[in-house]
Length: 80
Image (spheres, one colour):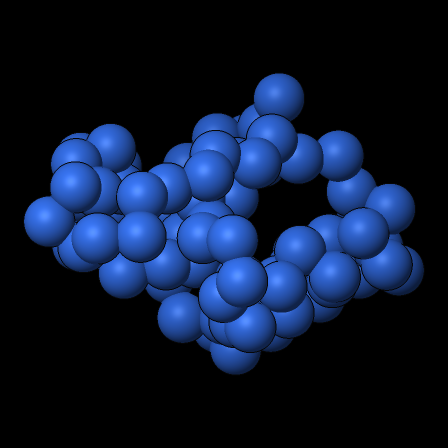
């Protein structure tokens, strides 16, 4: 799978990105992260920071954070 979304349950910014992915009909893998920032080692490994959401697009070699930036990227890259 080329799209992976690192997200936290109950995070409104994560839900915004997940909703966009769903609305666009894009397949993606969800990786649910720990609530404590100090325990988000996998997120730090892939993105260099511990905040979510983080989108990894293997097909295009892109890793990004910030929900607004991710939504804009998805629309630009995968929009109709």
